[in-house]
Image 1 (cartoon, helix red, strand yellow):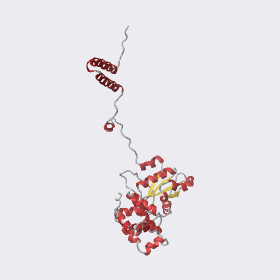
Image 2 (cartoon, one colour; image 1 turned 90 degrees about the horizontal axis):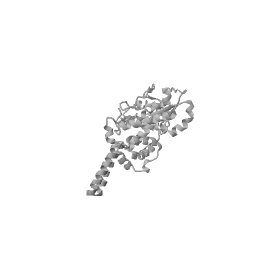
Image 3 (cartoon, rainbow, N blue to C red; image 1 turned 90 degrees about the vertical axis):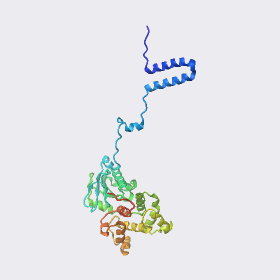
Length: 320
């Protein structure tokens, strides 16, 4: 009794190829056998293994799955459950922070961005991401009574450093008054020369300006002569490559920024007395910021002063 063996199409092709190769071997020799066997084995493997998908064709293929759209980085405040709000001049009431999509308007100069913790890490992440996108805002975090022991560590963990203002909230569901946030921002330490130089160099995307600007700001704020590093002519040629501000303008901007920072100008302050005595406050406020002295003193923070000067000076484009 004979049994019929069922063979797959691939096996039949291999068998047929071998028979053909035996017949051809008598005339052409072994090279023909090897070539026909390779073709048959290739056909058989193609039946059992699917062809690889072309990545370029998969992007345009209608059956290719669409890539998921990633949310903007600033939308991290939603998964963290962070209550983020904004306080703009004249600092009367808090408002919800608008969506940071491309179509949304940017915060105005002098705005304060406030985030309520817990969780503290979520609030810090929200503020850090917001400041990265809008460097001119002043960040403020509300710390619950149970998290007050973390205050010494917040400035070390966050890259915001001295820019971060802390305010104490009441209860686990913090409700902070606008006046408390304003006072917290005013109580921040005065901006250091290194912090202001870092702001300008990062905003202009020119890290090579960090050291020269630090020297100019240190001379203006701390009395360290900048000529110990380079001559005045060297600084003049360097700053002329990037814009119209000379070394004298940068030093004046540093003094003006320190005076307007964190609190209303006080005539008892040494820098304020220097500006008032030389009658340069109004002149440099109008020249560098294109604002009157009374309008400039109504805004809080020091970041907006540098941002305003960079925009008026033509270094960065105005943000709508």
